[in-house]
Figure: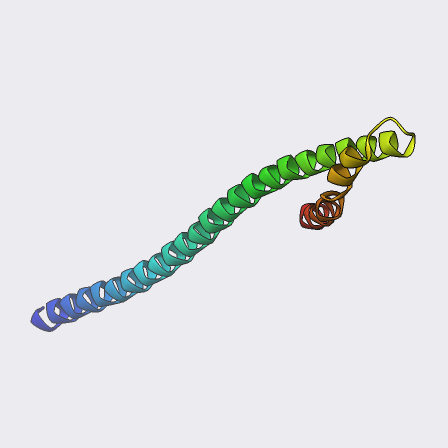
Length: 114
């Protein structure tokens, strides 16, 4: 009886030790999965923040592009009026001077928007 009780106790101890090892492995796997999930969440948050910032920047650039296009349109109207003799030489000169930089700004803004 004594030997049988000792074998039973030893079997229980082995089963408990195996369960403990299995539990440790399971906890380690869960910890790894949790760390991987947290990493994915962090990347997702960074990506979302980057996307929000990019969208905000795109909106600002669209506004700048609209302003630049309107300025260019105004200058073109002034130049057309000057060509058709409806403006003075002074008006034509002051209107044509800023056209080149505005065209450059428009091209740069269009490039950034794309």
